[in-house]
Length: 550
Ligand SMILES: C[S@@+](CC[C@H](N)C(=O)[O-])C[C@H]1O[C@@H](n2cnc3c(N)ncnc32)[C@H](O)[C@@H]1O
Image (cartoon, rainbow, N blue to C red):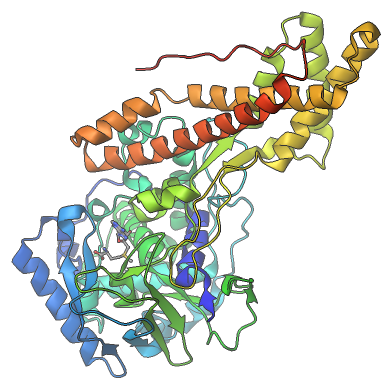
C-alpha cells in the first residue's frame, strides 16, 4: 500500500513554514463584511452549530461525484476544543471508503471563478525565492534570541489566498457557500501562534517557537503581493456595489485566510499511481519533487488529526478518497495525520497540541550555548583563551557549519500502515554535528594539555576524550534547561490542576515536552559517562548539581 506522506498535509505544513507568519491581528473585521464572514463557531449555540454542519453535509452530498459513508457523522467537539470532527456511528472495517471528493468540488485554481475571470493573475505570479525557510525540524541558529523568520510564499500559496479572498468576498453567491460557513474565517477562531499575545507567547519560555512565527515578513508579503492585486482588480474581487476594505482590513483578511490555508488546505497531488515520488521502505512517500496546486478539500478537512490516526486520503485522477486504515469502532473519531510534527510546530501551524505528538518533540541547541559551555568549562584564563581559539577554528570550518545550531530529537520510526507505532521513541544520541564540533575542540585541548604535562598522560586518551565530550554534552542539556523559567515538575503540576487557560495548556505541553527531551538527553549522557567514569581520573567534570526552580 502506498501512502502519500502525511496524507498531503505535509506539504501544506512545509509551505506554511515558509509563510510561518501572522500579525498580532486583533479581531477588527469590518461590519460591512460581516455577511461574508462565517459565524464564529466558538460562540455559536449547539443548534446553530448543528445547523451549519447539516447544511454543509447536505451541500456536500449534493455535489456530483461525492460519496459519504452512512456510518459517519459530523459532530460538535467544541467541549474538548476540537471544533468539528467526524465520528463513526457503526463499526467500520479496515480499507472502507469513508468519503469521496471529486476534484471538481475542491476550491483550487482549476475550479476557481476568479481564475476564469482573471486568468492572467495565475500566470503572472512567479514562485517566490525561498531564501530562508523556517522548517520545523531544521537546524537553526537560535539562542532563544527570537530572531524573526523570513517568509516567502510559493505561487501555489499566493494563488489560493487570492482565490479564497474572492470566494469569501462573494460568500453568499459562492458555489461553496455552505462549506465556507463551516470553516473558520476570523482570527479569533484560530489558536495558531500567530494570534497569541506577547504574554501568551512568553509562556512558551525558552522554546524557539516564538521566533518562528515571522509575522513581520508575512505582513510584508501580503502588502507587496496580495493587497495591490486586490486593489488593482477591485471591480472583480468585490461584489457589485460592496464597499472596499481598507489596506489594514485587507491585511487582516489575508492573515485569517493564510491561517486557514495553513491548517486546512491540501496540496493536490497528481494521481498517486502516476507520480514519481520516492517511496521509502515502509511504503510512505516522503517527498514530492514538485507539488502541484493547493486546494481546499471539503469534508477531508473536517477530520481532526493525531500522530496515531485511522484514515488516509488518496489522490485519484478525478477524485480524492478517504479510506479507513484499520477498524474504526462505533463512537471513535476518524483521524487524519499532519506529519511527524513536534508539539511546538503543531501549535504554530494548527493551533493545538497532542500528547501523541510528543514523540516528535525537538529542542534546538544554539552554537552560542555550546560555546558558552565550552568556555565556562575552563577555570584558567589561559585555557579559556585556548578554547576561544579552537572555537574560532571550528567556526571557520565550512564543513562543520556550526552556526546553524543543532537539533536534539529522539529516534523514532514513522507510523505503520495502520497509522500506529510499533515502538516507543527513544533518545539514543546527540546530533552528529554537535558531537563532531565538541570532539574536535576537546581533542585539541587534551592534546595541548598532554604536551604541556607529558608526565600526566595515562595512556587512555581516547576514553579521556570521550568522557570530556560527554561531560560537555551533559552540561549543554543542563544549561539549555536553565533557559526555561520553571521546572518540568512545576509545569506538570499546573497542568494537573487543570485550571490553566486553553492557550496556557498548549504552552505547557510544548515546554514540558522540550524539558522532558532535555532530561532524557542529559540522562543518556550521564549513563554513557558512567561507563567511562571508573576508568579515567583527573578531569574537571563538575559534580552533578541540583538547581531548584519554582
Ligand atoms: C482540518 S481542520 C479539522 C476540522 C476542525 N476541527 C474544524 O472544526 O473545522 C484542522 C484544525 O482542527 C483542529 N484540530 C485538528 N486535530 C485536532 C485534535 N486532535 N485536537 C484538537 N484540535 C484539532 C485544529 O484547530 C486544526 O487547526
